[in-house]
Image (cartoon, rainbow, N blue to C red):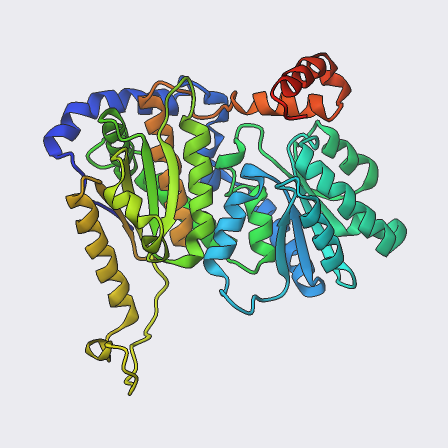
Length: 438
C-alpha cells in the first residue's frame, strides 16, 4: 500500500548495503539485537488474543452507550498513538459522542483546573494508562479524576475507571487488585512508543468508535510486507537506510511534511518514535514536522533559504474529497480555478514545494499511501516502526531505551521533595541560586 519515492539511492546502492541490512534484520528476528527484550511489537498484532480484542470492544461499547466523555490519562507512548489515530479519523468539527479527552501529559495546573470544570455535570469514565502507576504527570491527573468520581458516584466510583498497566506489579496494578478497576495489560516486552496496537491504544480507539479489527489488520499486513530480510523487497528498510544516508551527509534534521490538518498529532507520534529511539550517545536525526500549506507561510522561508541541515519526508496521504472550486462573481483572481478539484490543488502545491525545496538544496522523500483509514494508518505505523528500528541499529544505538529522560526526572523529583531523591536536592538548589534562577 505504500510507495517510497524520490530515493537518492539506486538498485546498485541497495545491493551494496543488502548484507549489512540482512545481518541487522536477523539479529532483530533472533532476539540478538540491542534492546531485544522490547521487540514484542514485531509480531504482536498477528498473535494478539482475539478474546481480549472482544473484551476491549465489549467494555468500549458500554462506555460509548453511557458516557459523555472518556478521559485518557497517560503521557508519551501511553497516549500519543491513540490520539494520533483518533484525530486523524474523527470529524474535524462536531465530534461524535463520547468525546475523548487526553490528560496526564503535562504539569499545567490551569489545564487540570479547566478539565475539572469541564467535567462537572458530565457522565465521564477514566482510562488511566501507566505501566508503573508512578509517572508523575499521569499519577497526578489520576488523583484529581479519581476524587471527582468518588464525589460523583460514592462507593461505585471504581466502575468508571479502566486501568491499562503492568500485568503483575506496580502501584497502579496494586490499585486494580485492591479497588476492583477493570484492567488491560501493558505488554512487558513492548515499549510505550511501540504500543499503539496493544490495549494501550486499542481501548481508546474502540471507545472512539473506530474499527480496531481493521487497525490491527493494517499492522498484520505491515508484518507481512516489512519483515523481509531482503532490502530490495523491504520499503521500510529502504527508508531507514536512506534516512541514515542523509544523516551521514550532514542532514541532522528530518522534517515530516503533511498536507492534511488531521494528521498533526500523527506527526507528534512520529517525533516521539524517532526522537526517543535514535537520540543517544551524541547521535540521532532530530525529527520535526510542518503542516503545509499552512507552514509554508511561516517555516517555509527558513526551509527554502536557511542552513541546509535537514531533509524532508513528505507524507502523501490526504482525506478523499470531491470538493471543487465554485463559480463566483468575486474579483479574487481565482477564475482560472473554477471547477478544479481542491484535492488536485493540494497535490500541485505539494509538487511545487518539493521542486522549490530540492532546487534550494533540501532533499525530499515521498511516502505515498492511498488508504486513509484505520487499516491504512495501522500499516503506516508498522512501516515507521520497522524503519525506526533499522535506522537506530545502523547508527549503532539501542532503539528501545531512553536513558536521557532520567536526567530531568531526577532533577524534577528532587526539587519537588521526593524522599527517594533527597540526596540530589541541595546541589540542585545551589546551582539554581548561583544562576539567579531562585
